[in-house]
Structure formats: structure tokens, C-alpha cells
Amino acid sequence: MGKETLDDRLRETGSAVRMLRTAASRAYPYPIPAEYTNWRDEQAAWRQTAVLFDQSHHMTDVYFKGPDSLRLLSDTGVNSFATFGKSKAKQFVAVGYDGHMIGDAIVFGLEDDVFSLVGGPTVPNWVAYQAETGGYDVEVRRDERTVENRSGRRTYRYQLQGPAALEIVARASNGSMPPIRFFHVGEFTIDGCQVRALNHTMTGVPGQESTGLEMWGPAEHGPRVLQALLTAGDDHGLVRGGAIAYATTALESGWIGLSVPALYSGESMAAYRQHLGADSFEATASLVGSFDSADVEDYYTTPWDLGYGRVVRFDHDFIGRAALEQLAERPHRRKVWLRWNDDDVTRAIAGSLFGGDNRTLHLNVPYAVNGTYQYDSVLGGDRVIGISNRTGYTVGIGHWSSLAMIDEAEAVDGREVTVVWGEPDGGAVNPGIERHLQTEIRATISTTPPA
Image (cartoon, rainbow, N blue to C red; front, side, top):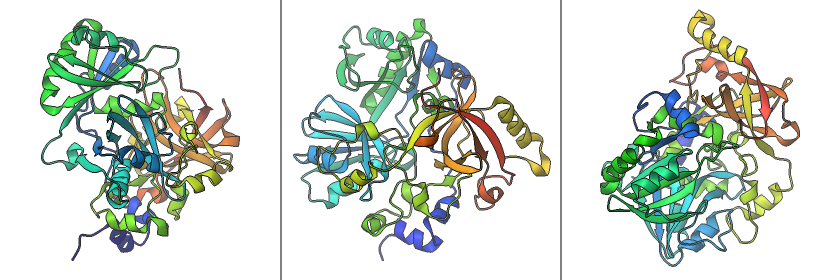
């Protein structure tokens, strides 16, 4: 008898939405200390000095080596790979056969025929499946995230973010760090260890230099590199960032990240559902929030919804191209920021603590995401016009906010909308959420990152 699959789980639960709604998993885990000092100072550091995040544990790394590696990426990504190669990186975006999002990850060009995908499990899993079933001359090597990895990670990964980041790395590397263009990879040494680094930013603070470097190398070098960075940062206000602060970085950068992947329905995805195990990330992920539909396809997204329309290139053939060409001509949702009303947020927090039998769902400060996929309804009047996703507070913004996908025609700067906070049926079907009453919170749309 073969292993139980995602397809089996779907048959057992009766529907994809019910499977996701009743899953016990909580928000995506970052298995590092919650705080090193406190989350407020750690958040402030990425605007004022610098913060170091240990990214060695929460992401799935899959390596592809062989003559067909670049063709594999081109066949599975909406991005153009015409000029991609060694020492380059990009935000890799994959869609299914119907043109809806599988997800995104960072793809790194490590050698002429060696590439890696790094991110949540969904995209690395999808591309590895295509490599293994599509007749590609590619060797696939996996380095699972820590929660799924009993043998230990092969690679350390540190993100240094903030105005002082480059100066700190320059000192730690004794001047060996070369100039690195944005979303390119450079190589240098720290304390005798060879380091690779990607120039990118996790926070995207407008009007400020907010350069960041993501550095990685063999796991056995990690402690030495970490200590050298911390020592070099002593005079620059460098602080270590914990899981709480890390989870909130996207509120400023605008990375939505986790949307329901378009794999739970459709005959074209049947073989993949039979490939994925019943204990896979895709089978155990949870869906929370006030947006409520029995049809899982109502939770699917397109590249435009998540702000990736700019990277879609029809200069090559890829999975989902024909469907995406049709979707390109249709109305989309637009990624926006919502600034929640201070009085309504205060009322909701107080109601969760002091509301008794009429309590509201707790707004966990500073990051109130209760499951893998957070989908809260955004109302324009009495009509749903979008979905609020990640939600929380950063000291840089100074208000509660969320990332959202709003119908293009409704995404107007300064427009007031309403976020419905709380689960359908008061959380009755979710084993990890207290019973509560839904509440409405006013919010204001901004199409640009908050200052």
C-alpha cells in the first residue's frame, strides 16, 4: 500500500476549503528566538541602524544541477531567463496550468549549471516535481527547512538590514566585499570563510537608504561568520532580530508571500496532488480569516494580485502561459497597504480581553496572523472588494496595518474601506482559535509603501 497523499486527504475531508479550514497548523513558523532584546527595538533597527536576522531555519532550499537546469526554470517560471546566470538572482514566480499562482521564491544563479530556489516549500516542491517528472537532465538536491529536517541544515543564511548594513559587512570582511549590484550575488571572505551575498532589501523603507545583504555558506561556517558580523556591528548599533520582528518585515516591504496555491482543484493538477504526501506542507497548511467561500478557487490569486505583473514575460514558453495571456486582459486586483483606524483597533483589542462572552478575536500584537493563509474580507460599502492578508504593527509605521489585494477600480489612495476581523461562525471549525464575534475595522487604502 502506497503512502497517503494530498489527494487522499482531500477525499477524506470532502473539500479543499474544509481541509484547510480545519487544519491545526498556525502561522508559518520561524524557528528562532522570539526576541533578542524586544521586538520594538528590533523593528526600529532596520530603519535607524541595522538588524541581523538568522534565516537559516525557515526556508526550503532546493538545488538544481545539470545541463537542463536553466531550461527547467524557464519552463516553470513566468520570468524571463534570457540573460540569467551565475551571480544573479530574481524573484521567481510560478503559476499552474490555469495561470493562477503556485507561489514565489528567490532563485539564485550559483554556477553556469547550478541554481537554487529558496523560500516557502510550495515553489521549490513544484519545480522539483517538474524536474523529476519532465524528463530534464537535472540533479535535484534538497535542504529542508529545520522543522522538517532531522539531519540538520547544510547552509547558514543571515540577513543584515538597515542603513549601516554595508559598513558593518565591509568591516567584518576586512575590505574584501566587492560592490554588489541590486539582486546580484557577490563573493568575499569573513574570518577566513568564503561567503556569498545577495544585495536586496526586506523592508523597502521609502526615502531612506535601506540596503540589505543576505549572506550564506556552509552551515559549519555559520557561527564564525555570525560572531564576526556581531563584533563588526558593535559600534554601529547592530541588534539581532527575533521571530516576532522578522514576521513583520513584510508589512513595510509589501511582500504578501503566502496565498493559497492553485493546486487543490482541476484535473491538470491531479497528478501533482497524488505526488504530494498527506503530511506535506500543502496538505497541512491552514486557512483562516473572515473571507468565506466554499469554492477553493475563490482563494486563488494571479501574479497581478500580488504585485508581480511587472515580472511576467511572454518571451518564452512556460507552464500556464496560455492561461496567463488570457488573464492578462481581464481586470485584476492590486496590491495595496491598509492603515487600520486607531480607535477601531483599540476597541478590537479591548474587546478581545474584556468582552466576556461577546469578545472579539484577539489581535496578537504585533503580528496577528493565525494560520498559513490569512484571508480577511475587505468591504467597500456592503460589497467585498478585496482580501486583507498579513496584518500587524511596526514602530516605523506607527499604526496597525495590513497588506491587501483590492479590485483595481476600487484601489484609490485615501479611500476608506472596512476590514472584517474574525472567523466565519465565530471560529467554530478551527481547533486553534477561540470562539468570538466578528467585528468591523475601518481602514484607509494606500497604493504606495507607508512612510
